[in-house]
Image (spheres, rainbow, N blue to C red):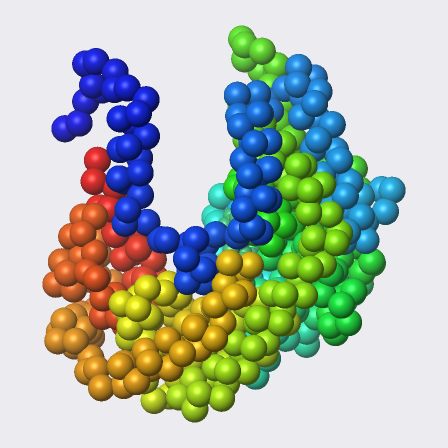
Length: 479
Ligand SMILES: Cc1ncc(COP(=O)(O)O)c(C=O)c1O
């Protein structure tokens, strides 16, 4: 087992070791990674890093001791709230990411409604099946029942009528995405939020992906529906700075229509022997880096910079969507309303296409079949990809050809036969681990080609997928 070294290692050696560690990481600077990293050019990166390092050591735990962090947070919240049509009543909090923003919005809704309607003892949250996994996490953490409403099979947008039918006396919160991550489409927020309002239910717009860019796309003439505080029933909204706000991680915002709602998010504790604890959101001690970096990048890029990013990225997305649509073998699940879309195929296995792309130096993400959404690959277009669209289309064409002849792997058949022969309740941590070993997964060792594992995941039930993922992670972190 590794131990703390007896003697410290010198700076140069440590930095050399770090460079060596990252050799196997995704090489996103190549412009051939379609996900994970949002980069708005070397100047914005430099400014974000400088501001981050300037505040790396300051502690966001106590804004009265570090009023500069308070000032920057207030300014970032104000600029962002105005961007999504907030008014003088709108308030918000800086968080570590979309997940924390969503966790906070769900906890806040639960506690707000609990105070008003104590008779609701089993609160439910109504959401389209495309809502982000973070809502499921919030449901588990805060004991709110997630009620999933299938989306329309042709557009992958929330089904308003089905949502209406799913409302019960226990519904406390409804959700819509602007846009959804999986398919890149904007839910009918106005209709959903009106429905929520009619029924005395809170409504959250998840604009983690779209909060910064959709208003710019609207200004550029794109037909973007309303999704922000201009919609009367919207009571909270999440928007990520560290995605298409192009600021360094960990940076997101959760906004509320008014102060009375946000009050329910805050945590105070005087019930112990130490200092009085008061937290705006989930974290307590935290670096000031992300707040300073977000403040600096927003001010550096400005409206002009963001508008240019929106225009160029939408142009690249359209070009890719059209090129892929014309390929014959590939089909878009939905027309993208922002910079992301999903691609399926009836003629080739999309998971082999992903592996072939990887062999050619490209990273794209698999998405498994879920309800009416078939297995597909996902593309998120960001600034580094914009100048690589022709190359991407060419390599994708080659990868489809290469994937065409590949048969399903032996291990997939063997494992799926074994699963089919077992009673679902007999599948557990141990035999899931055995299956992973058969498919070539052991500890932190993953096979180069992931199609077989992706196909196994795709064929398992949701419950077994989750079991497998947890086993995988539990083994991946070897200690
Ligand atoms: C629509 C949407 N909401 C929430 C999240 C969660 O964000 P994070 O990964 O920053 O926690 C994501 C992440 O991709 C997302 O796409």
